[in-house]
Length: 351
Ligand code: HEC
Ligand code: HEC
Image (cartoon, rainbow, N blue to C red; front, side, top):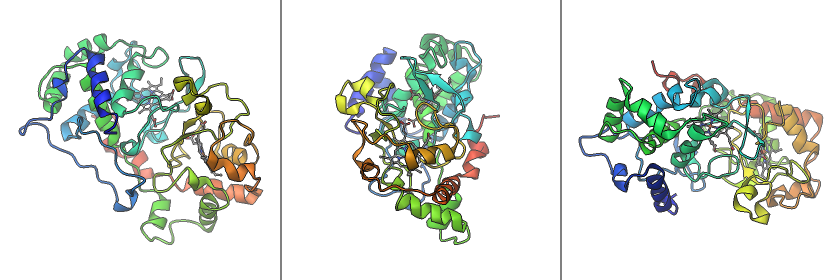
């Protein structure tokens, strides 16, 4: 993060036509600092929190972000909020796809544990949550609005100016402050309380069934899944080609960078809460987890030119999964859901 922070500050300042002064640290009498509560087992050297120094979490900033996340005034028609396509009960995802600007379908992504993430969007095109938040508001296929209009509406609203004052020290509202507040709220979407977590990290031997345990052993063993969907976050933060197609149409990261070895690469999604976030893959091509596991069992295009090195076991033909093993894997994936997170009233629409 720190490597990109200066560039991000500059970009943000440009996007809003304002100087850097709006990102100053809150005054001593300002908003109340908020500490993210993450279980000790969920942080290791490969999975550290990635919090920007220029947008510290505060109680007031998070509360404002939560309200903005559910705010329909962010959309051109006044009928869509972020929550319309990021529904809490579906792990903040949505069954619908939205075409990207090249017209390729993109599956709405689930939102949780983003405080650990380094790249955002399927093609990793945003390098921070702050930068990510600029896009949906103005994207034609998403909220199709205009930042000037959004800021004007919020400024004229009976409650927002005061909420911005509490979060950022003055009643002034601009796109940067909206994006910062949204990012703060999104960083509080933490999910670490699945049955798997109770079994694996908290020593509750009863929390998983025998079938789910067999599935976990396949996930970390013969299936080679954990090479990329690495516990505890169940992602490796990489952008890779898993051989969904022999020749990808949507080039993913490659369409952004133009680099040949980036073609067909997409962000590794977390396997947590995956039972809720159907459909699957960047284009939502699979409707069920069974279809996803069938793909890994016998659908991988091993000749794909940019196939990731971690797909080597498939190239060698080593990932042979019987029907009952595939069922075990699906059962395990379902044990990664966190019902408390999916229904936590503190993360839903504010009163
Ligand atoms: C019309 C549906 C829609 C709306 C409205 C919407 N999103 Fe999204 N969101 C998507 C889709 C689709 C993607 C994946 C797009 C892609 O990768 O090209 C996405 C991706 C994201 C990601 C990336 C997650 C990751 O793991 O990389 C974040 C964060 C996000 N949205 C937050 C927001 C916020 C904040 C808002 C409101 C300002 C919002 N979204 C509004 C559909 C929507
Ligand atoms: C080389 C890294 C890698 C390996 C190995 C791997 N995955 Fe994936 N997985 C990914 C990536 C990347 C995607 C998204 C691909 C895309 O959309 O183009 C993905 C997508 C998924 C999804 C869909 C998630 C969603 O939100 O859409 C599931 C479920 C999944 N993988 C489970 C597994 C299982 C089970 C295994 C083992 C049999 C496995 N993965 C092996 C990288 C990997």
